[in-house]
Length: 117
Image 1 (cartoon, rainbow, N blue to C red):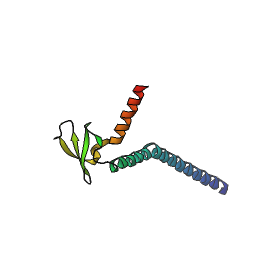
Image 2: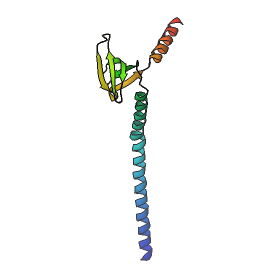
Image 3: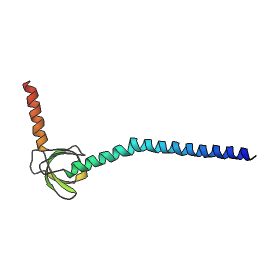
């Protein structure tokens, strides 16, 4: 009778351990597929917004493209279009993409070099 109880206890322990391992594996998969890439994206976005400077060309969540005129703690004043009177204050989180003026010059030189060849 004692032999029967020990084998049942061992089987229960093994099933609990295997169940815990399966849950741990599922949690690890969710972490690496969903949470980790999202955290990387947040860090990259924070880095882009922290490197924002006056004169940078930005694209907003609404799709507008403009130039940064002034930067405060969490607000940015952006000038849109050819009309220099269109200046709109917005939160930094509304900026999706930043292009530095140096990047525009380098990319323009690359396209002119490729046309020459």
